[in-house]
Image (cartoon, rainbow, N blue to C red):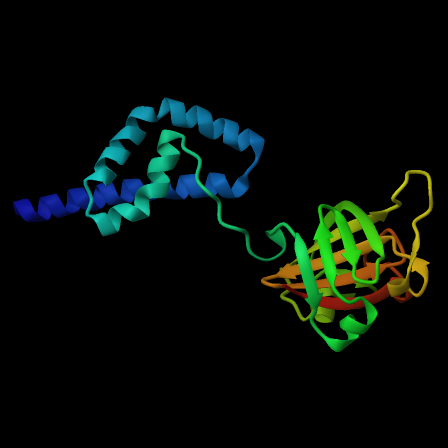
Length: 223
């Protein structure tokens, strides 16, 4: 084995080690559980010498390559870095969305998300709280799935929210989107700049929910 070959293999081994470290950091950032973060902190402090060596090695790389390791260097030093917005339903809904079609424009107008509240251009508001996450393949009534109704993938994440009364102890107010009846649950599919909204007259959504419980489906796009 020539000296050049040996140096090349050594560099590849170092690169493989650094990439493993990158994968570990990205995995922990994706999980975002307090217990995992705590475990990561313990590992980071125990592995500080190794992390320092990786940071030092990355600093000797060419500029174009070293840029890719900035996130690793920051994680190893314990620095905070901006986290990119999540895709699809993992992103936090906020801001104003305009109607995506004529039916939505006529029925609801624009929709603004303020914290857990849905504010419609009509002046009607729905106060919500988290219920659960469903998937596109799940049924919201006998024989009908979210995926089929919303033209979405089977693994799309549907955010289900319970509609609660503005004042505890009082009944939820009726809403025009439910034909003058109260809405008790909402289903939201967020994909890119589009949000699809489904409202239900019942607080539970599943394969046993009667078809009459669905108030309707409306689509909005970010402004």
